[in-house]
Image (cartoon, rainbow, N blue to C red; front, side, top):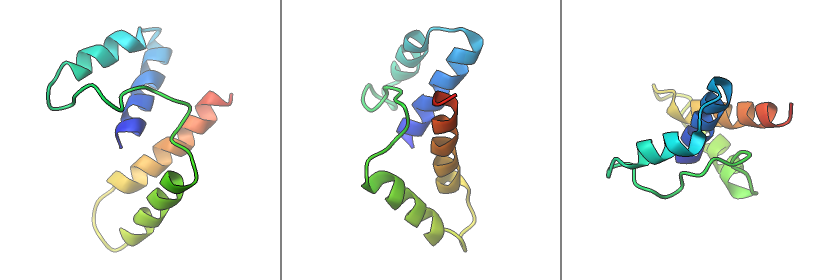
Length: 84
């Protein structure tokens, strides 16, 4: 979730022609957020994380909520944005 969040902050900063690093430093100055796992990347990848996220999303089919599905969708959109 945190990876997807900061990837979307990066997308927003890119569209607004804003400094991503300054935005992230401001967000991370909140002690509840902290200063780890806050670097935007191409998307979250590897073998396990995308697969496990999709599996978790399937397990939420009968549970109200949209967070897991939204994280998976965010990662898919990030790939499209980066690969334009």
